[in-house]
Structures are given as structure tokens and as C-alpha cells.
Image (cartoon, rainbow, N blue to C red; front, side):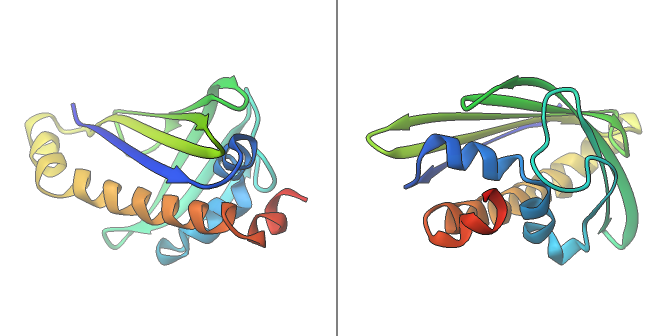
Length: 157
């Protein structure tokens, strides 16, 4: 079962980075290359504990949907979203945050499992892990860009 771990240093307060990370509107903007949209559950604003969101997007040429539920929430240091419906057998994304001297470290940990047994494992190894890392790096770069400038106000005011 693959695990993706990424750390992103952001020169912004922890509360701002935490809230931008749970913004449905910013997520939609960061995932524009896949035409990602929130279509059910929480579809705008800041997602909270116990809320779900259903996304549709085009990945690998297919329109797919993915529903996540916020299963853990401790503002501003941690939240977790877990897939309840979608293409994976299992998909959990932990978002952790720590601040030191005004710089926030945003840590992502995605633990997932594809269906189809050994074929799914091969697909994960050859394609999916790298694809998800790229998707998450693009998203984190945009969170960083918005958090470190005045652009964050578009999503949090």
C-alpha cells in the first residue's frame, strides 16, 4: 500500500495555511487542470469536521468522482479526510501543520490502496503514486503562493 509524504514550508501564519488547505474554493482553483468541481456535500467555503464533499474530475481521460469525509479535526494543527466513495479501495489524507518563527510547515500524508489486487499494485507503482505526488505538489505550491501574498483574502475574508 503506497504512502505519499510531502512537506511544504510556507511563510505565513499556521491558521491561514490551515484554513486555505480546507477551502473548497481554493481546491477547485488548484485542480483546474483536471476540471475538478465540488458537486455534492460541502461545495464552497471551508470544510469542517463531519462534513463531506464529492468531487468530480477528469483523471487519465476518465471522469471520476471521489467523496471524502472530514473524520478528524484539530484546528490549526491537523485534519484528516477519508474517502467514503470513489475509485480507491482506501484513501486517507492527513493534513498536519506546525509553526516555528512565523513559518508554517504543512505536512501531507496520503495512504491509499487501489482496487484490483496485484494489477492495482502495479498501476500504483508505475503511474498513480507519481501522478498523485504531482497533483499534490501543484496544489501545495498554490496554497503557498496564496498564503504568502494578499491573495489569501479571496478565500478567507
